[in-house]
Length: 248
Image 1 (cartoon, rainbow, N blue to C red):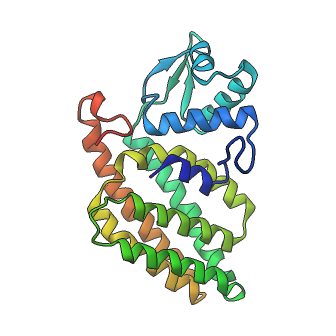
Image 2: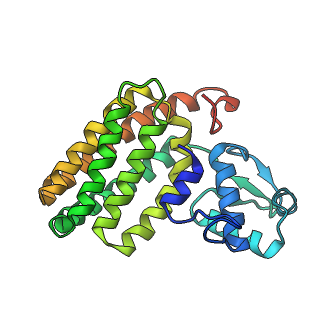
Image 3: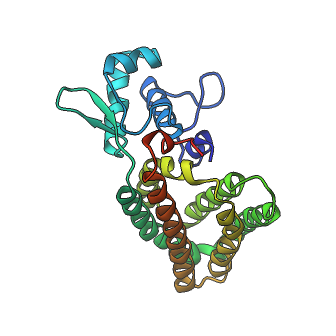
């Protein structure tokens, strides 16, 4: 999963001179978040504000605002010496995040099913994402492109649910969980299953069946969680150099 695509999905993308302009604080947050997700700032690594200010070429005030936001989503930790550490990866953290995501996404599915008949164009949009996922099945390109369509499916579903509170809560979870997805998104077996799981969600939502939509979403997230946690535990048993985001 490309981290810039993730930022677009959760409403944080932008670039000077191209579309919406970011504040210095937002830009610093986006840059640091992307570096952590990609492993340029490796899990467990330590640094100072001075080093980060030099790396990003940004002043202290917007940098500190960005750091506070990264602390809030659990990606940076303050040390006793006032230094900073990128929060280490752990299977327990990934499991907690995916459990929270499951409960929130289940509610999204219920609300989307409730609203489906009033918004047929949104159902068409969801169908288009599923068809693109199906077209990618069997391709030897890894899970990344299929996951991108899946992310856009979930973003469209969230729009159909029409809940600003759920959008805010899920944005927080997506930002926290992305580095785990980044190191695991080459699971080709997982890629072959994603389209079918999303199609099941789509059919339930389109029919307006809130219970079936909730069950399909729960199964989808729970299945992904088991695969992710199993893989992550195996990776965490390897030398530290082999488990930083971006390694394969």
